[in-house]
Each structure stands twice: as C-alpha cells, then as structure tokens.
Amino acid sequence: MAGRANIPANSSALIAIIADEDTVTGFLMAGVGNVDLRKKTNYLLVDNKTTVKQIEDAFKEFTAREDIAIVLISQYIANMIRFLVDSYNKPIPAILEIPSKDHPYDPANDSVLSRVKYLFSADSVASDRR
Amino acid sequence: MAAATVAAEELRQMGLQPTPRVEKADDVLGGDDDEILRFMDSADSYLLLMDSLSSALRQGWLDLASARHSMGASRVSSTLFDHKEQCAATKLQVVYPADLRPSESNPHFALSKWCLQESNSGDVIGMQDSTKPKLRYRGLAAAPGDGINESDATTAKSSTGVDTSSQVQMARSKALSVFGALVSPKLRTTQVSFETALELIVELANSRSTMLSSFSQIKP
Image (cartoon, rainbow over all chains, first blue to last red; front, side, top):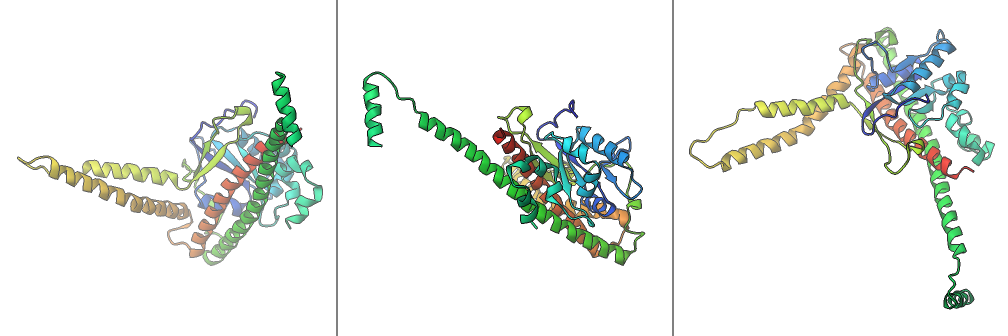
C-alpha cells in the first residue's frame, strides 16, 4: 500500500466490490464488472465458505491495484477484517462500507467515522441517525 | 473603537505601526471555522447519503428477489457470471485538485456509466460520416457542397444523442444477457436501482474525501 502509485488524473478507474451474492450481482448488472487477461476480477463474492484469509487477500489486492479507485465492502465483512480496514488510511482507493441485506449499516462501526469520532460525542453519531 | 483609532493614529505619527493582533487572530479563527463547517457539512452529507444508499440497495435487493421468484433461482445466480475477459462498462474518473500536495490529496470522483459503449458510439458515428458518399458539382462554386456538408454535420450531431442513448440501452441489455434472452422486468428495475446506488456511492466517496481532508486540517 505504501508504494502504490496514484491513479493518473482524469483516467478511468474501476470500482471493486467485496460483498454477498445479491449485492455483487446487482452491481455487476450496473456494469462495474471487469475481468482482465489473467482472469482477475474486481469483485469477491463472499459466502459462508469464504475464509477470512481470502477476504484479507482480496482487500489487500484491491487496495494495491493501480486501476481501482473505490473499494466497496459490506460492513459485516469489514468487521471480519476490521483491523486491516481501520489501519488503511490512503485517499485512493476510497474504502466505503455499505450495508447488506441482513446487516444494516451501523455508523458506530464505520472506519471513516471512527477516525473522526473524537470530535463528536460517542452517542450522537450512533443514536441521532436511527 | 474611537479610542483604539486615536491610539493607532498616535502610534503612526510616532513612526510605530500598531500590530494588528486582533485581525490576525480573526483570520486564524475564520480559517478554522471554515474548515470546521466544511467538515461538519461533509459528515452530515456522508450520513444522509448513507441513508439514501441503504434505501436504494434495499429496493434493489427486493427487485432482485422478485426477479428470482419469477424467473427461477437457477436463472438469477452468480454461477452465470461471465469469467471471460471483459472491460467494465461503468467506470470512475478521478480528478486531483491542482493546489494540493499529493500527501494532502482530496480526490474528486465522477461516474462514467456505460462509458465503453458511449465512446464506441462516437467512433461509429465518425466512421459513418467518412464513408457517406459526397456529392460532386461540376462547374459550380463550393458553396452548395459546403451547405450539404454542414447539414450532414448537423444531422450527425443531432443523431449523436439518439445513437448514444441507444448504445447505452444496448449496453444495459448486454449486461442482463447473462441471465438469458428474455428477462423479467423486475431484473431491469434491479439494474436501475443499482445504477442509482452507484451514483450515491460516488457522492459518498466525494463526501468522504472532503471530510477526511477537512479533518486533517483541523485536528491538533
């Protein structure tokens, strides 16, 4: 991650996805799916057989790729690799934690908000938005 | 205020300039206040956009479940994904502000939906113009020919928008073609919901970028 080059300005970049089947299917229908010459995709479909190691490897790969500008990760999956997600602090690619079908979004667990939370009280972010 | 003005005038007459300490403090506080306001606005925008994203995704999942119910689970499944080499049709444009150092970069994201098909449509129209037969007038000035060329250009420009939208529709249909030739209308509404979600995601990324940039300015 430290040696990752910036995406050149005004060039096209991809959106990577680490999410469950329905979320990945939906975003692929919206046209974000990419498969390169080496059959590497810009998405990882997580099910009950996916290991934490596979999720970590996919996260590290997507954040190291020069052609990816945003990484979408379901928040419940991000919780599995919370240490890795919270320790990431580069502007590109932007890591966005999104809700999933069975796990609604919780602002208290969001890595971006947790970075700035000491400017707010701990309760205001979690409770006022419910 | 009047006493301060008199004092400043006296100092100036003595050859000493009063130090505008109050103005400097106001500038510093004003700058910090701007950043704090920018941070609060971006944080509020981030949370509101996340609410909207949750709604868009919920709608998409509901439509997808309806499509799966009507078409059958085997026809709407991840096993149908095409693993052949393919470029993403929806991409991002990343713009960096020129006045910031790379370490303080506050990138701005813009979404290009179905961009592959849009750029191809431009190429196709260019080729069509070049292959169109041009009329030749013998013994006449070039004006009539120019007029015809201009009308051709106008026609090409007006048809560009139509061709682009038709190319986008073709791209949308192609994205759904992995699920079969005839798909449920619910699958198309699922596609629209997730396209909306993508737009919200790009706005979220921009809010995140602004929030982190402002936070880096105001944190001690």
